[in-house]
Image (cartoon, rainbow, N blue to C red; front, side, top):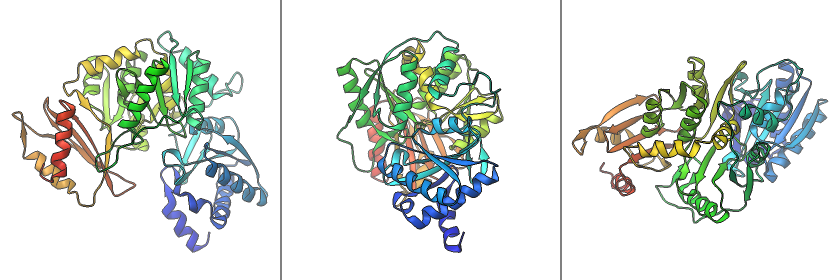
Length: 448
């Protein structure tokens, strides 16, 4: 590549591939350079062609089509395989000797676009192999499943419990993630209702709480109300590329990823799981009560998989809604499998109720993402360290990217600097919503 392009792509590379504003990927010159890079990558792995998938967005489909044109012009075979989720593309790459590429805006579509590359069932990161997206370990050619939905359904049917069938509502079923989830749950016999255009008066301002960094409390509340109207037992909110999820119950409200993971671990009889350090106190207590070891890791997909590789953990999860499972060939992201296990488990709702009944801190919101500009995060930690609440002082656990602070039976706070933006994320668990809101108002006043 020429010097200017090297500099541009160097700034665009992320751990998981490439990401920038969509307008840059619409530029013909940059697509031509990207085409050359993909062909070189294909040749480095000894592959013969490039398969391109995209999410449900019109921009992603257009970029995929134009990118294929440049690849074909270079003399390399390439096909646009259409509308696919990330797990489907990873699965496809484990079945064919091709470099598989996904064009997806994920939860920031259509403003941002990411390019993810897969080979042999794994996502390639920064020019090297990463086991993050491994869907299926290498097996003998005979009798292998070639359809992802059938493969996941077969695994669920082999679970430690007898699967049940439920009335499930899938929000935005036309997305790649929604379509994948629909096929899997339908294959398992669940009665599916499709919820289109579930909207809400989304909150604005400094303190907007979101689950899995994507869905606001207002949005999950709108879904909860619709679930009651359509008489569905549970609702599924899954992002465009199918790798992060939040569930919603008509009475219990949003079910966060760590709660989902804890219920799956108990249903499957796991002895150890990995969760990033934002895991809630209630979930950790629930897992400890049932003899399941909880290994806390730094935040990030590679950190989760590294921690799993160094342990015997049967499950890894992030509060951002990503789920990871070990296989005979490595560790793969497989969020649809976690969804299918949770919704097919007969005791799933009972496990969520048990988590919440034993929670000393009854209220949890989602994750706040707040600009660092004008907010002294280190000073906030120092102020908390000097406080006493209901007679208890702060207990800190520190990680390279942040910290968690606990006042026994009163308050639990996790703060973390973002690696990709000038923001920090804040999670607060408290005795009540009123107590929770008071903490936020104190922060706004700048005198914690």
